[in-house]
Structures are given as C-alpha cells and as structure tokens.
Image 1 (cartoon, rainbow, N blue to C red):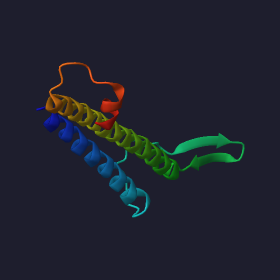
Image 2 (cartoon, rainbow, N blue to C red; image 1 turned 180 degrees about the vertical axis):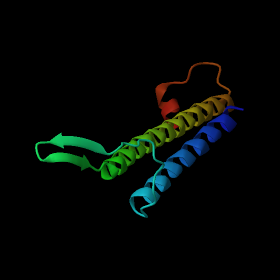
Image 3 (spheres, helix red, strand yellow; image 1 turned 30 degrees about the vertical axis):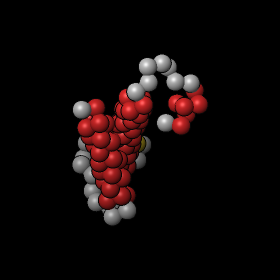
Length: 116
C-alpha cells in the first residue's frame, strides 16, 4: 500500500513540474497571453500644462506576467516537494522490505545497512 502512495506522489509531483514548465514555456517563449488578474485603469494627472493621461496597459501586462511567474514557481516547488516525499517513502519501504527479506532477529550492523 505504501508503495502505491509513494509512486502516486512521484507521478503527481512530476506532472506538476511538467505542467508548470510547459505553461511557462508557452507564455514566455510562444507569447501566449496570461489570464488577466490585475487590471489597472489609466491614470489622469493634472500638470501645469493641463491634464495628462498615463496609459497602464504595459504595466498591466508586466504585473500579470510577474504574478504568473510567481504562481508557476510555486506550482513547480510543490511538484518537486511531492516527488521528493514520494521518493523518500519508496526508499523507506525498500529498506523495510529488505530487512524483512533478511529475516533478522537482531539489529544489523551499520555495514550491512549501507549495502541495502
């Protein structure tokens, strides 16, 4: 049962890592648009020469790309952590199975454990 959960964690972790890498590749290399999270309105400024409008479209794009990159970095780190937990779980299960296969009644010495 623990092996199934370990392999499941590894697979889900690898899928999350690939998802985040592919999504970042599509956005930053293929130039696909990201979902607009932040929408800043154009800013109107009063100067001594009259009213001036500052467009915020480029700042909107930059902020949305930054938020997307932070979110994908978070998804990437979660996937890496899940895969790491899965591999640790599988490693512990393998050591447990190897000790059961040896059918030892006493605690093995350190050299035998290193060979496992």
